[in-house]
Image (cartoon, rainbow, N blue to C red):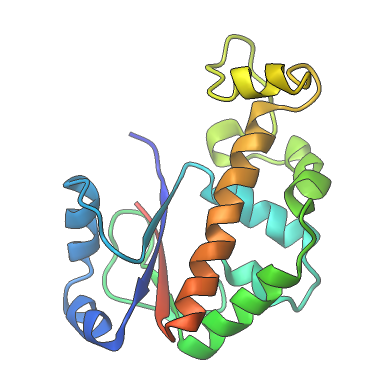
Length: 179
């Protein structure tokens, strides 16, 4: 089993509940229950974090979007490090910074992955790899030009932007974890 990233937005009530037992997030994930405010990043977490580190300005709050580097530790370790929490003010800053990024941000910064070690081997086309987006790329005439990883990362990134926008509107905190 590989590591995967998760973002979870929390109301004050849910925050209080999880402060005592962060493992409740894992229970929801393992049961595959639909939990409002829960976004699985699957294995894209490391690639997206590195793309943001590469392409966002040095002081941009967007760099906190995936692993909440500027947040505080929250709860107990769930397997790979202690989850990190962004307060409402930080969530709003991340949402604003993500919203200011150009629409082709992932595409423009994707090449940074080629020289890095990235969990899930994003940025490296592997012969014989399963291509979930093959039909879509073929239909656009781009199957040989655009790596599947780029399409997948762009799709997940779009969900991250929407996730933060919603959390900011609801004035919720966000925890980021890798399990």
